[in-house]
Amino acid sequence: MLVIPHPDDAEGGVGGTVAKWVAEGTEVVFVLCTNGDKGTSDPEMTTEKLGAIREKEQAAAAECLGVKEVIYLRYGDGELDDTAKFRGELVRAIRKHRPDVVFCTDPFRQTFYLHRDHRISGQVTLDAVFPYARDFLHYNEHIQEGLETHKVGDILMWGTEHPDTFIDITDTIDNKINALKKHASQVAGSGRDVDRFVKVNAQNQGQMANMPYAEGFKRIRFRT
Ligand SMILES: [Zn+2]
Image (cartoon, rainbow, N blue to C red; front, side, top):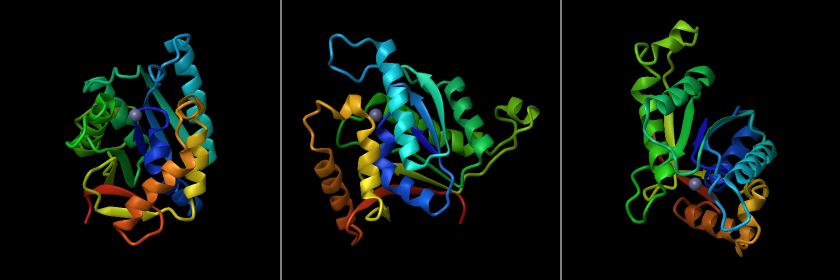
């Protein structure tokens, strides 16, 4: 399961790993927290229009990667807060889909200013996994509805300054690039050479682990 702040964050951070794991038979679920409705500099654009466009782009990118389901929480871009409601939505998704591994953004980055939604979604995900999804008296209404508590095995945080776990994405780097390009509203007009940007980034991560192309994560283990 990936908990994603904005449309396109998953593809940029974890797209190669998702494509690789799906090819190996893993079921992947995306939980998209916001609709990315502020991500433009086009003066003609509105939040309503952009939110709808970005949701479609996310659906196309997820399909491209072979993701089983996308859960849209539809918070406004920049409007995430550490609330009981948001935490409960993540707990419910975890109890329903019962992931072995949860991916989120590293909320503890310090060397550059982290987008508020990345910081908050990362932190609330860590809390949702432990202890809230695990203990039945938290959000007990889920249990009353028939869901069960769930223990996640690992959290892998992307966008981290201190990666300790590297996944070789050499075979799926093209899938990652193709999925990222589905986010046309963000990619087009950015002036960025997406192919080059993704490859250089993956090479840099790979250098730390002797792999041609890699994605790096910081791992938290709950099961030993
Ligand atoms: Zn983002």
